[in-house]
Image 1 (spheres, rainbow, N blue to C red):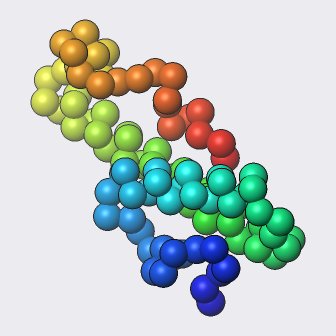
Image 2 (image 1 turned 90 degrees about the horizontal axis):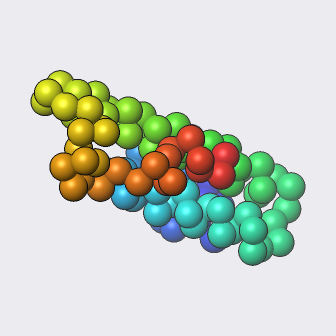
Length: 95
């Protein structure tokens, strides 16, 4: 069942990248904040958002593990000029 306001093929599918999962999560948050949704639609968006948060966390954890495997820690990458913004941790996502 396609929900109003969702892009085709987004519900239930695993995004191809972290960036896509995060972009979809941002869309869901905007829909929850800006639209008058029925209770059922709100619950469906919340459920999908929760799944996207878990997907983002899983991907971030995998990236962190990969950094460790390559011989460094995320802190080492940050000191070397890598992009690691502690203010945008997956644990700070809105779900």
